[in-house]
Each structure stands twice: as structure tokens, then as C-alpha cells.
Length: 191
Image (cartoon, rainbow, N blue to C red; front, side, top):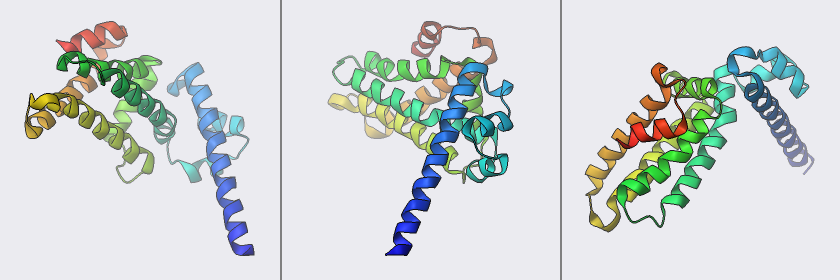
């Protein structure tokens, strides 16, 4: 009984530290961008040592994934809800895409680094794995829209959804689009 209580307390303390780290990183990244923030600043704001910070995340990129994954997941859920009652397949797909693009563009440099970390990060790292899961869920949502009313078969819908995902990724990550607005990016993806 005492062991379970201690173990429960330890897990709660770990979660509280992770929440402080996430909140500190979120605030600092939003204010200054990932490139202008050090891990020491994040540790100081979270009121922990840098060694403790590195027990939770190995790199600043992983920390950005930790912070942004929930934002992307929320954006995807908004997109799914928006697309639910839109009969036109293209309009419904774009209803899924738009909130994801908006999320990515809230801090363009952070959004581009997030995409880079997602593609080139360590797939064994849990926050990276979560980012890839969100990408897969986005493709599933697009495929589901394309399968409505048997407009497209499941295999073709999955292929088209992967293409939409790749186009969206490239539009958001491309250097030529750094200054592009959400509307411009969404228009490019739609075309």
C-alpha cells in the first residue's frame, strides 16, 4: 500500500514537472521563437535544473514537438468537426486542412522547425511518434471524407490523402512561403 502511494506520488510529481516544462517552453517559444530560446531559459522558467529538463526531453526539437503536438491535435479535431457536414469533398478536405495550416502559421519559424523535427527526428522518441500519429490521423480524416458516399474507393482515398498531406507539408515548410498568409497557403494546397 505504501509503495503504491509513493509510486503514485512520484508519477504525479513527474507529470507536474513535465507540465511546468511544457508551459515554460510554450510561453518562451511563442514569445521569442525556438531559435531565440535556450534550454537553460526553459529550465529556469520551469524552476528545474537543466539536467532534469534533459531527463524529459533530449533536444530543443523534442521539446517543440511536446509543446506543439497538442496544438496540432486540437487543430485536426476542429478541422474534422468543420468538415463533418460539408457535402462537397474538396471543401470538406479544405475544412480539415485550414486549421492545421493556421496552427502551423501561428509562429512560422516554430511551425517550420516542428515539421522538420517531425520528418527528421528520432522515431523512437515518444513526442516524435505522437507527431507522426497526428499526421496519420490527418490522412485518415481526409481519406474518410473522400470515401463518403463511395465517391472514391478506400485504397485510392488513402493514396489521395497521402498526397494532400505531402502537399500541405511542403506548402507549410517551403522557404518561398515563409511570408505567405494562411489564405495563400490554403489556396496553394487547394489548387
